[in-house]
Amino acid sequence: MNSITTRVWIAGASGRLGSALSHRFGGNTAYKLVTSDRDVAVEDVSVVGRFADINHPDVIINCAGLTDVQACEENPEEAYKINAIGARNLATAARRIDAKFIQISTDDVFGGDEGKAFCEFDDPHPTTMYGKSKYAGEKLVRELTDKHVIVRSSWLYGVGSYDFVDRVLDTAAKEGAVHLPEDEISSPTSAEALAGFIDCLMHSREYGLFHASCDGSCSRAEYAREILRLAGKENVPVTSASENTALRPRFTLLDNMMLRITGLYQMPDWHDALSEYMSHRQTRVNK
Image 1 (tube, rainbow, N blue to C red):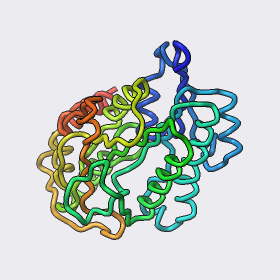
Image 2: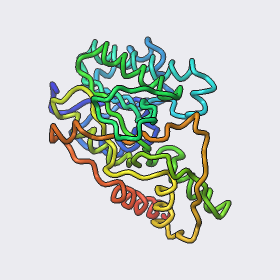
Image 3: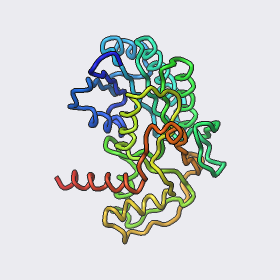
Image 4: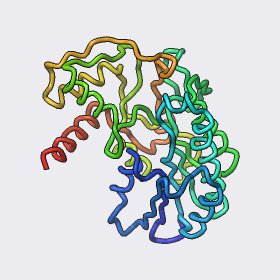
């Protein structure tokens, strides 16, 4: 970085990760934070370029994206426009102003048929339009700026948008039961935990590709049971059910190999991160 104060642009700042990063950096005098959401459409190259030139950040973090899996399937051009072209536009702007570029990606770049954890050296084979568009964004970032880090994570939850935790608790309250697959496997990851890694990454000299999910794994059904237990609703049954398998890869567990071999950061266990989040969530609800 070329100054004491690190200038950070968070694109997609109102989402789960964007909200966690804004909360982490906001009010900290070590950072000058600029944020954008749909007011700076990432798919519009001229708008992105103008915003970058005016604010001249040291770091650009791309949290923007079309993450609704069904919406991506129904409108693939929109998925590619936001998830791929948006990444391209931000990466191009980062190269021009010599900013470090952090691209947020997903475990959905893997097809989920192999039944093993995927490390950074495994080749992606996305099967969903969401996964395909995000992988296309990764490839464009690699091509367009050297000073990049691509961060893949999984099953992200947190404040900022309706998430899996909200869905489970709402379903339990309305229906008295939750139906989720036992064979859809990955790792729930707290946006706050991922924001901690990104904070570390911003000040490192590391570039390339990192997997950053919370440690451990579970099924969607196990995840829901833990949410209900932490919410004091253990009596709500969670039964096995099949979701639309065409839209969700079954096994996308990420292996954080690069974090281990570089010694850069340790992500928390998913149980611990979820427990902390649920505790803070309950505090917010009670206010």
